Length: 340
Ligand SMILES: N[C@@H](CCC(=O)N[C@@H](CS)C(=O)NCC(=O)O)C(=O)O
Image (cartoon, rainbow, N blue to C red; front, side, top):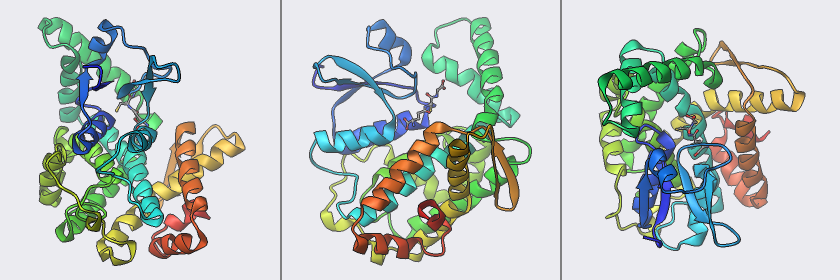
């Protein structure tokens, strides 16, 4: 058991699903626990309780609670060899990091918005989320937990920026994303070719909820993007795929559909991420910007400014020649603004 990586999380957490699918693809042995089991087994608690939590040896060899899927993937790519999900070409790797962060930080808005806005979605999530932690409880207790989780999560809609004005913007973006991903997957099995990149696992994580659990976005996915629905079911377990180096499609040979996907990133994620970082620099109490012609207002989110910082650093660290290659791909997508 000790050679298995321990992690805790939940089936309704997109980042937990991202990491489980990643571990399976990498063939990294793991043991998965619910949060209550992790507590019962005396595993350390993270400073900020986030799902998933990994338990990895710290500097003194003792297990430490570590969260945050994006840096965890980078750490596991360095610690364990074989079947990498980060492209070796540094320019392609920046595009991968951008698509990964879009899924983690923007697509998650659609997930949270649909789940806690529509009654059918609220009812399903409210009863299922607590049952995932413990199902052997009386009805009255489960119903009480359902009511309190629904109240708590609906109260947090504003944190992701979902409200009456931004809701239609989030929904239109989700529909465009589905159509763009459907078209992209028509030409190749994964975002960057014939093998999965970290961005595939990030998109998969959010889509396990949007296309497989919450009824409103799930119906849209089936209607607009049947291939995407099939893809999500398969990416869950890619342990048998035998990837080759040549399965990465080069940046210059990517299909036009990648441009359409990046244009969606540039249309919605880029203005919110840059306005958020600006609001934090200015010490403003609110992010105010325009997305897709509609006003966007949300509480500043320091973590997302950190994400943008990582992306900018990766872009700045490129050689001049590789940066020019990335900029050529981003030209006309709206993503240029992220690195301006
Ligand atoms: N950036 C983190 C995000 C993790 C995250 O936000 N997890 C959510 C659940 S999917 C969470 O634990 N939220 C705190 C809560 O629900 O109390 C990652 O990539 O792992």
